[in-house]
Image (tube, rainbow, N blue to C red; front, side, top):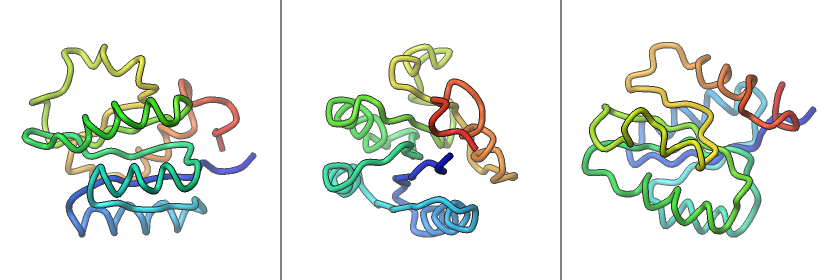
Length: 129
C-alpha cells in the first residue's frame, strides 16, 4: 500500500521543518505550509491523504483550514497538533466529523506517535502501512 501523502500546516518554521523532514525520512510525500491560505492553495493543486494541522490558542489558521478543507476534500484526514486544550472542542467530539485521526499535544517527544496515528483506525485502510 502507498504511504499517505501529507500536508503540514504550522506557522513555526522549526516545527514545520522538523515534521516535514520526519515524514520525508519515513517515506511520505510531504508539503508544508505556514498559513491556512497557503495550505488551501496546495490542497487545490494536488490531493493529500492527511493534513497535520497546528491548532492552538489564538491560532485560527487550524480551525479555518479544517473548515474550508472539508469542503474541498471531504476525504482528507487530519492529525491535530495542539499547544494546549484551550480552543479545542470539548472532549474532541466535534472533531469526529472532521476525520481526525488523533490529537497530539506539543511538544511531541516521540514523533513516532504521528506514524502510529497513520497506521491504525480510524485511518482509512487505503492509507495504512
